[in-house]
Length: 126
Image (cartoon, rainbow, N blue to C red):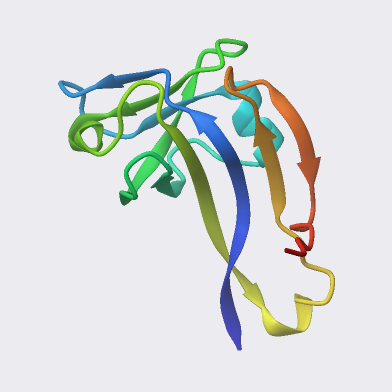
């Protein structure tokens, strides 16, 4: 059996700009893409922490070192500059590979600097 699993995420990235009159996609700083393992033109899901919107688009490579997360085209209606978002990509994993499989989790501060990298989500006890 093959299962659709979380491949990687950018957690609490900040939208730095929106471009409504753009063909589409989400431009992400190449450094952030590399840290997460995102590929140009890869499908992503974006979860907006500010308004609860959840939408699908694809990644294009942004300028390295710019810390940009630009939500473009129709998706620009679903996020605003300054919104914090979770950007996820998923992949298909064979069931026999699941014991070794771990996603890449990249944690960002309010300026899209990387504050942490993990391979598993830490258990939170209330």
